[in-house]
Image (cartoon, rainbow, N blue to C red):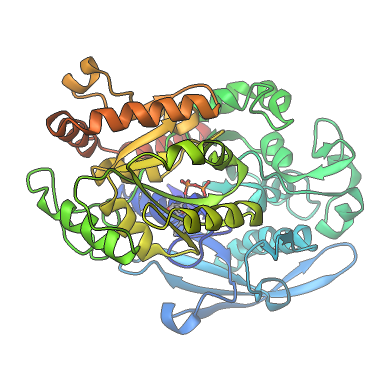
Amino acid sequence: MKILFVSSEVVPFAKTGGLADVAGALPKALKNMGHDVRVVMPKYKAIDGKVFGLKTILDEIKVHFQLITNYTQIQGTTFPGTDIPVYFVKFDPYFNRQELYAEGGSDYPDNAQRFSLFCMSALWMLRGLDWRPDIIHCNDWQTALIPSYLKHHPDLKMDEFYNRIKVLYTIHNLAFQGQFDESMLKTIGLGWEVYSMDGMEFYRKINLMKAGIVFSDEITTVSETYAKEIQTFEYGCGLDGVLRHRSEHVTGIINGIDYNEWSPQVDSLIPAKYSPEQMAGKAECKKALQKKQNLPAREDVPLIGMISRMTDQKGFDLIVANAAELFKLDIQFVLLGAGDQQYQTIFEKIAKEYPQKVAVNIKKDNQMAHEIEAGADLYLMPSKYEPCGLNQLYSLKYGTVPIVRKTGGLADSITDATPESIGDGTGTGFVFEQYTPDALFKTINRALKVYEDKKVWKKIQLNGMSKDFSWDSSAKKYVALYRKMLGA
Ligand code: ADP
């Protein structure tokens, strides 16, 4: 099969969240299964053309929307260590900026134009390459105009080259929808016929997430539970009705993770390697983490780690509500994150208040993310909602026992540790249901109590380390879905 994978962020080129990890790993798994997969993303400022060996592939792609004509360029390279082509849409006025989507807390005001240009260029690129994919796999609102263009753009919908291509649209986070003023319609090259209740209109705005849901052949999201949740009022972010309307075409496929990057047996970013058979290295990682974070290097104290975008989604308000009680306990807490100013300020204050217990790192730092996964005893992820979540999966592999709320991908990947589940090998973490400070506090205390029993704790760690969330099985599910879409 020929598959074009379209994403606004891809590891190792550019990343703001889990989408980039998926876009960096799933294509490789598809390639390993023998498919011709290629990836396209924007060429941002932070992507160093020299480091990645970018070359010009197509010099001028004409993108003509009603009012303006722009010429974009396609550059290309391969994923490091593979022969998988990665194409970059280069248009400096739009993409040669400091960030991907927003700066200083506000979205770039021309995001609609930026990502419509990206989508259209990606489509015209195919003809330039004379490479016609069977499937275009789109991801989140930044790519959601592709199915709209294929079905409704006057130059594309009648074109033989394009009109047999099927589109899969994957939702990585329903909360980010790409909503714009209706006056933008003409600047993204579409007419009023798409701007209706069964098109991309949403409370008198253009909603690109809705366009993706409505105009794609199939829709997936990144866990089975989230696929069900988003069809309810509580989790639907206003689009639950639209999703229910298409429910026969909505499925959940859980993300895998890349064990070449995230496994303590091979991780070159951690101070000591370890494995289920040889756990001694984990204690060394803990000691090194404590030292680097300026915390007392005590082996016996439970160390809780957290690596996260600092937003309401991730449950920071529950931690704040518990702070006074929580940090009375004999624990250590290491946080790595960046995001909302209010949370950054609160957590920096907490760190000052409890210098012996709490270390807060407000930044993005991949190396430190690995050090925390390896050095912590427990991993905290009390999300309000979580489409899939990756860090709980990394944590399992590193023997770092997750404390999670039962939602989305967390519900699908972590099984609560009870005497029974610990014994039969399924218990891998500590799970709570109600989104309340009290439920979180009780569950942390429950985990700390179990932590005191070294033998039981080790069994939970080993249960988690033996779980397999590699891409192999999820990639097979995507391929089965692609085949179904092609009527094969
Ligand atoms: P989301 O996509 O909602 O942010 P995920 O759990 O799916 O959450 O993915 C988050 C990814 O980003 C993980 O790979 C995590 O390690 C990484 N990450 C988040 N914050 C930071 C940070 N401050 N520094 C380094 N990596 C981070």
